[in-house]
Image (cartoon, rainbow, N blue to C red; front, side):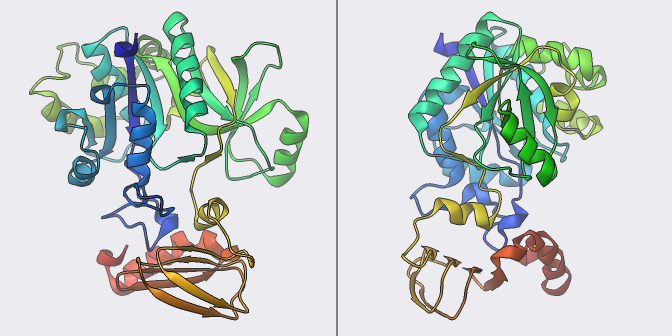
Length: 358
């Protein structure tokens, strides 16, 4: 049975909101963001490998990160990498993976998971994924994992489901990031979950969904000549991939399909999207300061997030609720409340100091 289990780890993003730690040459998924001894992608691979054979785990990433992936994931080989020659969002990449797996094993069931999320209860995660694999092996359904919301967060998409006694719920609809009032209504209604971007389906079901909703993409990527897992795959992808529409799996497939189901889960999930979300995961001192990497003396300082190279001695006096990040020859000091400006800051850095620093 487990030979039919496959996974695709999505590892092509740049994570610009984690600048200066995350740069286009070395994005956040390849960093040990929490000081846990493993990078985020290494932790993700090991978590999935508890259930899925290592040779059945594919890594979807940008061509420029090929060496980084192979260096960090010693159990993977070059033919497990899906190297995207162009940035086209998640739908083309997931179709590429599904066609490649189908060519190898038409009975395959695949998990799609981001490379940069943090999960506290990994045993619970494994149980939830196994439940999903079993359901998708038996039925023509597209499944997503829905996180139990603990606040009216406006940074996530929401999934509304049918309230009933079944473990796996039928999805009513998806809502993109709502405003605060709407998010509060969602939470109080009790029939909404956060959309974590973690999916499970059989390769037959997802290919069928593409034929229904994005037939042009099937025409581009499915040549029906068994090009996948052959010497011609790279050339075929390099020639055709960029012709695909730039669209997410959520917009392209999930919001249109009639057979979408959700498993409500609660395994201590954090998408580690910003310095603030990282701060929330870290241990704090009595003044709510968090440090990764260096050793810090705090004087009349509270609520700060400090990230430096290992062994750096840091003294922070008089700061409250700041992010201080030092990496090589770059230093960022920014109020936590303004962390959403970091994306704009990187474009200014690019213009002033050059590409090498972002």
